[in-house]
Image (tube, rainbow, N blue to C red; front, side):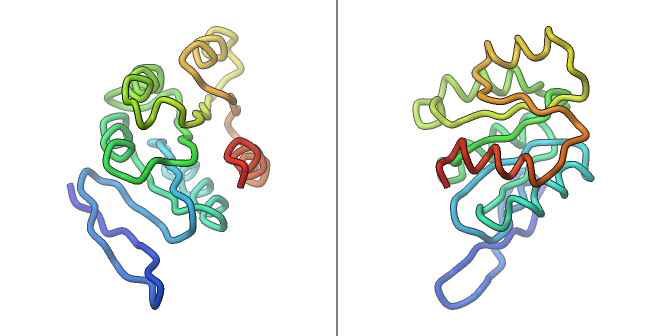
Length: 148
């Protein structure tokens, strides 16, 4: 699948094409948001785009591919119930990639299930955020994690 994305150039905003259903929005540092919930993803993209070049992925394989081909992300936000490749398997994949193993992970979950929270921590997540979330709170958490 091909998607239209946006990248900032010194003189203008121009369209670029990215494969695998990945969409980018203009900003400064790259960040990846992986969530199949379009509303949650849009909310995150909207608030994070103020400071980051946001890449979006709608499922696990698209997130893995985005992380592999994009510039090293400042952070990766990933929903736990992610189609085709869940967040825990995605985290394991990322930790096997030398250039990605130290990227901060933030897991987004639908319930305060202690098992999910513990598994997220063991998978390398630095934060676990419950849905529904307040977008500005997520922005503050990501800003602190990335030092931006």
